[in-house]
Structure formats: structure tokens, C-alpha cells
Image 1 (cartoon, rainbow, N blue to C red):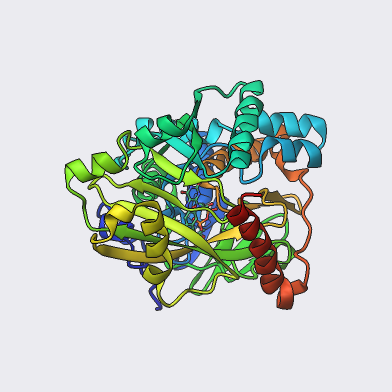
Image 2: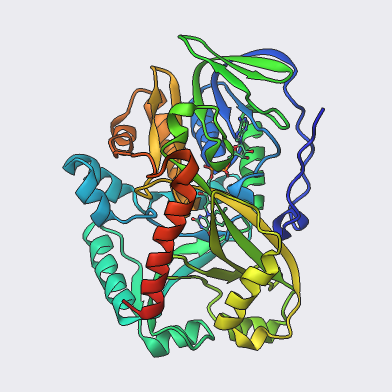
Length: 427
Ligand SMILES: Cc1cc2nc3c(=O)[nH]c(=O)nc-3n(C[C@H](O)[C@H](O)[C@H](O)COP(=O)(O)OP(=O)(O)OC[C@H]3O[C@@H](n4cnc5c(N)ncnc54)[C@H](O)[C@@H]3O)c2cc1C
């Protein structure tokens, strides 16, 4: 049987040991079958199990194999497009609900870590770093907007204040979100998977769902088995392929690349990021970085539209890292990897139901660590008959990418070049 291992990332290297979970063999009945053991699938499973549902999770490869086990580890609140954009595209009541929920995902992560004692190196505080006056004005507006919806714990940083947090000369200021933070993403996923099993949930790895037979009882087929379920949640995100053709045209897998340095000595690490916050900049194609628990700098950036795997990740990301931190010129790079996230045209999540019982949530477009945890709660509420918050997300309109399957990648890349140029020119 084909066996898909983790990519060779720093996270796989430093993951807590976990036993192999057996592939699905034969037939099984359950209340809810979940496709994908990333944060969306695992968060949904936990909320459902906590409310008495029987749950089976089918994972094509391994727990946290997708973006959830490869990301920057940054707990970034809100969504990839902010509340003002949502207010312009969703009905007023739905927009107000989504604004209220914008910081809930981060709280869910912290509750999960505390309740299930998940060891994943949680640190508090995330910074959005501005290069230009325009970006700084945007952060000021964002702070007011978030505060209007009750999300406080935010602090604007001027040039001196951000310099005290990040040893880089490029930023003119920033916004510190004290309710942001960072984690070891794969260990968070593995801890959540163990919590799912502690509540009686089943997880089968190496069990790709190859077909879903729809009807009042859903049948999810893998190469060697079948699960019959009253409900299903499809949480395969950028790795789903064409399992649900209805969704594929309105979303596009994209890659982002990450490197990890050798461990820095304590003084150098503290000099680089004295507050141990995570940082992402405000450019359209943004860079993001933080320290790991063993003091490596984990630095990500770049987007490959269409999710092609670049052949030499270090040659793409190391120059970005050195532009931010020239002091790391002689620091060794120990790991480099790529992962896929799912982009939608609006950059807002694609959430809904096909028929009465086949649910999905995907496409958080780059910022998904918090949203996916919220999504699990909102999906579980919908299955329990409380669909108000689910309906708010489901009301967001989604459109196919211009250019169809053939031209959407070059057209989107061209659009991104335009925004990148504006960032370079400070417009
Ligand atoms: C490199 C990178 C860096 C990022 N950094 C950040 C960050 O710092 N902060 C942030 O907020 N967001 C970040 N993101 C985004 C964030 O990681 C994702 O939005 C989030 O993890 C998506 O979770 P998910 O569960 O929806 O999907 P995934 O984690 O991708 O999980 C989907 C799972 O479904 C499985 N699957 C797919 N198809 C099938 C099938 N047919 N049958 C069975 N299983 C299937 C896959 O194997 C996979 O394990 C980053 C993303 C990437 C790629």
C-alpha cells in the first residue's frame, strides 16, 4: 500500500513521537466522517466528540501532513481580508457576526492547549510590521476597526518601539497584537489528534477518500474501505484535488516556502527578537518569521501560484531573510520546505453545505491557523442545528478565478506582480 510520509521539515524533525494510525480497512458506520486531519478536520472532530457525536477522520497521508503541519506557526487573528471588506460583501447581520468571531480562533487554540495539555511551545504576541507610511495608516485603521468590535490587546508601535522588538532596520512601525502568538504547528495538530482519540474518535491515516456517494447516508470510499455516515465534513483544503468539483473552480492551491536556521545561541536569539514575538510584514506578498523553542529563526515568504514545488527553496527565502536580518549572513540553514494553502478570489473562506449533509470549509487564503479552529466550532454548531454562525460564513459570495483552469495561474501571478510593485514603490 502506498505510504505518504511527512515532508522533511523542521517540524517533522522536532515532532513528538506518535504511533502510526492504521489505514481504513473494510466498512464502518459513524455519525460524522471527516475528510482531512488538519486543523479544520481535527477542530471539527473535537467539538463534535465533546457533544456526543461518533466521529471518524480519514486522512490521505498523516495527521498534520498539509498546511497545518508546515505553516509559519503564527497565531494571526481575524481573516485574510479584514472586517471592512467583509462588511462590503456580506449581509450586515452576517458581517457583524463574523466581526465578533474574528479573534475567537486564537482563544480556541489556547483552550485546547490548556484542556488537553498539548505541548506545542505556545508563546504570546504577534507583530504586524510596516515598511511605509501607507502601511502604518492601514494598521491604525485596522486597530480602530478591531477595537470597534471589542478586540483590544492591541498596541501601535512607532519606529523606536518596533526596533526594540525586532532587530531590523526596515520597519517604520507596527501593530502588536498581544492575543496573537506562535506555536509548533505540527505538535499542535498531533496533540489535537491525541485528544480526538482520547474522546473515542477514530483517525485513519494513509486513507485518501477517493469518492463520496451522496444521499441521506453518505458513503466515503478509500482504496480499501468505506465509511457510512449521517454527515460528512470535507476539510482537505489545498490538498483536496477534484474530490468536490463544485468547489475546485472557485479556489486555487498556492505554495509558500519556509526555512529554519541552525539553533542560535541565547544572546543572538534574544538580540534578534527580544520579546520572542512572531512577526509578519504588511506587504501583499508578505514575509513572516519567529523563533522556535530551540532558538532557530523560522522564516517564510513567497507565493507560488498553482502550488508548483520550487526546486531550490533556500535560494528563494534566504535572500529575503538576509534583507531583514543581514546579521545572519553566516548562519547555516538546516531545513527548507514548502506547503500549500488554498486561495479564493476574495481571500475569504469558502464555507457551505452540498445537499443536506455534506459540509465543507476551506480557502482561508494564507491566514488559517486561527480561522480553522473557529471553523471546527462553527461546523459542529451547524450539525447540532445551530447554524446562525455557519450561515454567516456561507453567505460570503465566491467567484471562479478569471482565466479558467488554464489561465488562472498566470493571471493571478500577474495581478500579484502589480501589488508587489506598488509595495516596492511605497504606493
Ligand atoms: C507554508 C505555509 C505557512 C503558513 N503560515 C501560516 C501562519 O503562520 N499563520 C496562519 O494563520 N496561517 C498560515 N498558513 C495557513 C494555514 O496553515 C492553513 O490555513 C491551515 O493550516 C489549513 O488547515 P486545514 O485543516 O484547512 O488544511 P490542511 O492543514 O492542509 O489539511 C488538509 C488535510 O486533508 C488531507 N486530505 C486532502 N484530501 C484528502 C482526501 N481526499 N482524503 C483524505 N484526506 C485528504 C491532507 O492530506 C491534509 O492533511 C500557512 C500555510 C502554509 C502552506
